[in-house]
Amino acid sequence: MTLKFSFPVNALLSGALLLASCHQADTAFDAQAGLDSFNKDSLARHIQVLASDSLKGRKPFSAAEPKVLDYISSNFQRLGLEPGNGSSYLQDVPLVEITPMGDPTMTVRSSKTSFDLHNIDDYVFATQNTDSLISLYNTPVVFAGFGIVAPEYGWNDYAGLDVKGKTVLVMVNDPGFYDSTLFKGHRMTYYGRWTYKYEEAARQGAKACIIIHNTAAASYPFHVVQNSRGSSNLYLDERGSQTYHCAIDGWVTGPSAAKMLAAAGQDSTLLEKAHHKGFKGMPLDLNLTTRIHVRSVYNTSKNVIAKITGTKHPDEYIIYTAHWDHLGVGKPDEKGDSIYNGALDNASGTAALIEMARAFKGLNTPPERTIVFLSVTAEEQGLLGSAYYARHPVYPLSKTIANLNMDVISPNGKTHDVTITGAGQSDLEDLLAEEAKRQGRSIAPEKNPEAGGYFRSDHFNFAKAGVPALDASPGDDLVNGGTAEGHRLDSLYTANHYHQPSDEYDPSWTFEGGLEHVELLFQIGKRLAYSSVWPRWKEGSEFKAVREKSLDTTATK
Image (cartoon, rainbow, N blue to C red; front, top):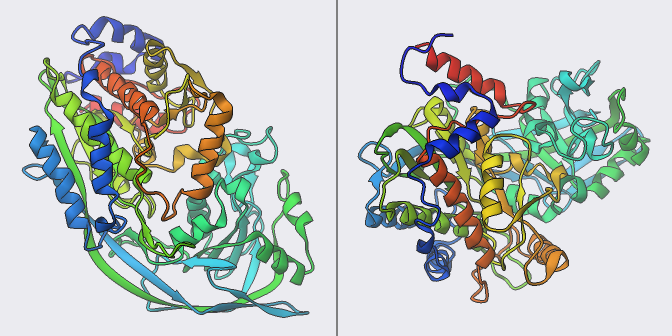
């Protein structure tokens, strides 16, 4: 490989050498510069506006979207940031809003019995197809274990199965959740994500794919599925594409799945057998009948992009991301509140993105590399804004140094620790560890690696495109209260507020821990902004080959 332009040679060195060069190259790095920019009052003001009832839950395509976009872009402009997409602060993201209006019930028939399951209560169906009517009529059901085809793990749940035109019933997560010797053990792989299940079922030619919900294996209760997938959903506008999707992507509750299995003469032992290597999927003595009427509306949502152009390396980019969207107006809670304000998820991250921009803009010595602030749309609908950006990047991904993502800023107190989501991926984790140490904090193991958190926010689309991407959060070891209190607060949020109308701004929030974490991400970006370092993927990362291919291609041009 011959370098034919001024591409950083140390981009091809080992992670250890990269970090060593970071210390040598970041001579303009001032450890304290900009830290005094961050404060609770400013962060809270942004959250209160973005999570107000007047913005109706910030759903893309809603009447509130222009107000949200104007708020973010006007704040960037007020700070003196440059437009990030030519002369505009906005990037069009063509989407389609698909509203499935299903029959109230689905009939399940076996050779011995029949019964009805109830829409939303027992199952939730969505579709990526825009046909006006989608029907299952006595469609056969095939049980396909985890619905995984993973040659590198010697695993193929579809081996010997014909699922073309049929409904596949699969389990959530991957075999490592049940047996730590399989796959990556309790750390979920992408094969465990619900998005993968639907993608693989489509590759196999299935008409429908239904995932059996399990709160522990999914890492969230069924009401999250009901709230997120039970009404209209957004997808990238793929008109003109030949991509095949299943007609129906669905979930079914555990008890309803047990009832289905019983009707087919099976029980939970079938699921248990599927946990083990060598299990063979099988047709079930079941047929499903239901209909879904579909309404499709094509429209364009927006990403918001601003930048600070680097003084020495303007064509090298560090991208901070946070999604601005939430769930809009939906199913009322027990208090009759139907506005899903999303104060923490993710008005807090959007507020932090604005505050991050303010801190970088206020530096006496401007960054040497270009800093991009990207507020993406439609994360809650499947990471769509970041997916569109990754497919249509404003700045070359091969020249993008890193992505640092902010999704839910902790409202609680400071912690002794930091948790890296999906640890073991890139050199960014080493920079984070160094900066955390300067704060007097340590790296704690990910609490629920089986939840697949690395695949559940916008950094993942950068990772899939080969850009080293970091997602981290404060740990649970609170300075005041310890791990017991940290676990309690985390569990309280997940059970009572995550994706629910009750995720509203609370004046009692201190954000001490959240601000400390935002400062940590600021320090990492600042380190990179004044250095020639190119963080790399670690050995064993599934994204390493993508990055190396893009660097090889770019370097030989």
